[in-house]
Image 1 (cartoon, rainbow, N blue to C red):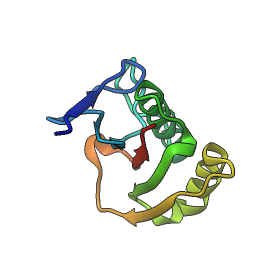
Image 2: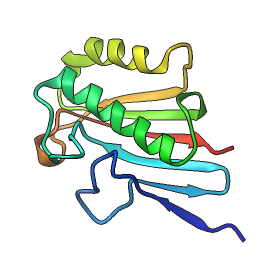
Image 3: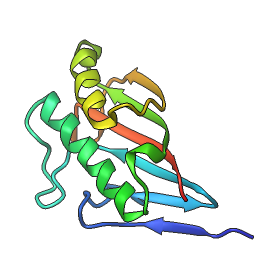
Length: 127
């Protein structure tokens, strides 16, 4: 029987609730939603673009801790407070993903924890 493997790194913000940064099960890694929080100060970056970059940086740190890379990402879910920021999201996201194009959803929400402007989560394969 497979076991759950809880992933945690100091290079990404600590969970702001009763959950793990990521959980691996079999060959799949489930990364919890990442806000644009600086892991050292636990404060949000200033503005949508900076929060998006920090959120993606946090995802990358968790992927790395789990032994994964961007090319292992299977799907991504993005939650935005303002869909008018969709173009900015796509530009930053494309820089991070490069030629890799996993499945993705982008959903406008009424609010995010701590007043965040964007939250990004992903599922990746573990080798």
